[in-house]
Image (spheres, rainbow, N blue to C red):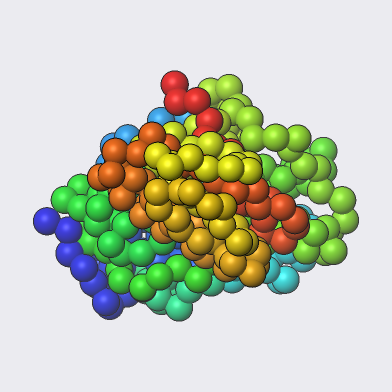
Length: 321
C-alpha cells in the first residue's frame, strides 16, 4: 500500500529507513532513495524496471552538499550560483570519498547532481541530511509524472509513499550538462534553456539529435532513444490529422481529430512544457479507450523550453526495442 504524505519530515524518516518515496520537484516527480544505501538504490531500478546502465540524478539540499560528493570547478560553481535551486543537473567527477553508491551513477566515475527548486523537496532533503538518488517516478520508458495521481497510476503498491506537492510547475525534466575536461556538453535539454547557460559559461556543445548512447556508457538519464513514451504510437510534426487519431496541439489546432489536448494556444513554450506530460497521458488513456490508432503531435518550433519539448516528443515517438 502506497501512502500519500503531506509532511516532508515523514518522507525523510521513510528514506532513512531505506524505503522508496516519490516526491515533487519543480520539473517532475522523482522516485527517491538514500543514495548511500545500495539496497535502497537497487530498489529504484526494480520498482521502475530501469536498466542498470542508466544512471540516476542525486538530489541535494544545497550546492555545498552536492559539491562535497563531486569535484566542482569554477564553471560548476558559477552555474550553481545562478541556477540552483532550479532545473539544472551537472555531471561532474566523483570525489574519492564520495558516499554515493556506485550503482546510482551506473558505475561511472562521474555523478549527476542537482538542487531542486521545490519547497517540499528541499524541506525533505534538509531533514534527511544526505543525497537522495531520484529518477522520475514512473515505469521505465513511460511518460513522466507531473502529479501525485500520475505516480500512483505508475507505481502504486510498489513504493512506500508519495509526498504530495500538487502539480509540477515546469513540467519537463532538468537540463543535464556534462562539465568534462574537454568542455561543456549538453546531454539533455530541459528546464533551463541552453542559451541561459551559455550566458554564464560560454559556448556549450549540443547534440545534433536525440540518440541512444551504447550501454553501458550512458552519462546521464534521458539518453535512451525510446523514452517518455505513451502506449499509443506518436507521430511528429503533424500538418494534418485523421479522424482516428488524437491530436497534441500547439497553437490553433488542426481540424478533424477524434480528441485534442492543447499544449498552448498562444504557443507559449513554458505553458507547453508544463502541460506536456499530462496531455500525453490523457490522450493516451482516452485514445486507447476509444480505439484510436495513434497520437499526432503538431510542431513545437522556437527556443526557450521548446527544444526540451521536441526532445521528449522525439524520444516518445522513437521505435521501441
